Structure formats: C-alpha cells, structure tokens
Image 1 (tube, rainbow, N blue to C red):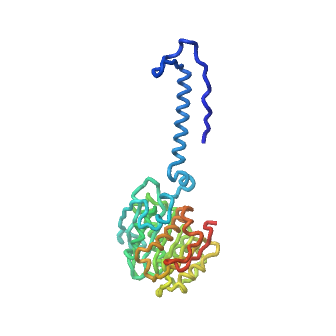
Image 2: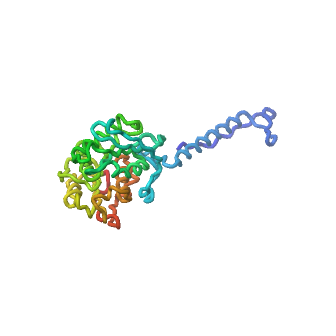
Image 3: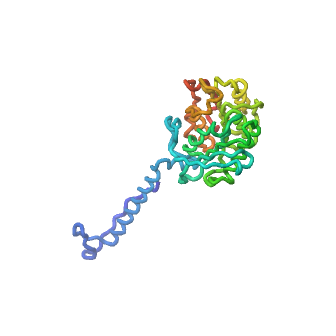
Length: 323
C-alpha cells in the first residue's frame, strides 16, 4: 500500500492577501486550498485501496482466478444448492454427434466469468434421469454440468468414454452456453458402466482435470495409464460391481504418484448414486473444485483423509494433494 506523508506546512501570504473563510471569518490562501485538495485526494485513494483489499474474496480471486463462490464450509459443501442460480437447456439426440443428447445445467450469472465443466454418464440400461440430481447440485456450486444420454442404453464402458468426450466437445464448441465454459478445465463422471466410461475417457484424454467414477463397472481392472486426478467411489453393499473386483483394483492400479482417492460408501448399494446423496455430492464437489478449479480452499474436506463414519466405510488417498 502506498504511504502518504503529511502535507507540508505552507507559509501564509502577507496580511490582506487571503480570502475570508465562510466558516469562521479566517483567511485562506490558494496554497492552503492546494494542500487541502492533495490531502483529500490522498485520503480518498487510501480508502479506495482498503475497500478493494477488504472486499469478500478479493485476495482469493487475485491468487487464483478460477475460484468461484464464497469460501466453503461444511454446511455449504453438504447443501442441496450452492450460491449460484441455475438454468438448464436440453440437447436433443438429433443435435448431438457421438452421444445421445442430454441436459446442460449452468449458473445463470456471468459476473464471475467462465466456469469449469463436467460431463456425466448414466449406467447400463439407464438414461440421464438416473443421475440428473447431480446436474443442478454441482452447477449451483459454480460448474457447467452436462448430464448425457448415451446412444443406446446398453453401450459398453469404452463407448461411454468416447461419448463423454464427444459431449464435452459439443459443450465447448457448439452448445448455446459454450461462452460460459473454460474449455481448458473439464472433468468427467459416471455411474456403473458410465463410471467405467469415466476411466476410459480419462485414459484417452490426459488433459482432463478430474475424473469421478461412481460404483464403476469395467472389464478392464487396471489403469496405470491415467494421469488425471481420480476419485473412485464404491459401495460396501455393491453386488453388481463389487468393490473387491472393481472400485478397489481401479484405485490401486492408478499410478502411485497420481492425486487419487478411494471412497467406499457405508450401507450403500450399486444404485446409491441414482438418488440424491450428500456424501457423494460433498466429496465429488470437493474433488472437482480442487482439480478443475485448482481451488485449494476445498482441500480441507479431502485432507487429512476423512475418517470412517455412518456414511463412509473406508477412505484412502494421497495427501497433500497437488504435491
């Protein structure tokens, strides 16, 4: 901050050369007026500087231009809705190339600039409706979210991976909200075969910033090629994609030096991600914020590693993140 010295004393003019002051009858000089104006200008500049420094989020925004929204709290990351109002627009299958259409959820405000984005795939035999709850929940926290339909409901994970990438390309290049998206900050999520497709997408496109497979299923169990920070979410009661043969080997096969985590839901099934779930939303949000937005304010929810609880059976991970 600029330091301002006290204004110098100015010698008064000879008696009778000043002007009468309307306040007390004393005389002032032009030199006095000049000093006062300089002082007032300096004081105004200092006040403006302090206001800028003390403005909410001013320091954070200067440190990381990708931060969106106020500083997070336990309540804010578990809330059904975040600080942004959300709108949505549909993409018909006729307008989609390489995927089956879907719904884009996005913050209505443009005051904060562009947002990171995430594409989400449903699972085997399912449609976008099965994971639609994640759309407005994540968008209200400051993301553009594309919940897609696949070309057919029986598409396999490798196909779903390609469709997630095609959806991101549509979102950033042809969608009506493309100007709201930062094409350099993208992530992928998916349930079941869509979770397997999430891993396929991350393997195919290393530029992705985050991947979150939800009770994922894939015949490929090892993913040493992935360089995208990945949060694997499994369920202790999953009989369709048991964690012992899916989520756990997925996680363990990721490179040792990669930012990665494994969250096993307690008292959950393969289909738990199909309904609104605070634990899934909380940790998915924190992961996306940390790696898509590079927002270290959210690392507090990931490191130290969360402990087992009523909703968490087990949590493994690499801390600190981004090291």
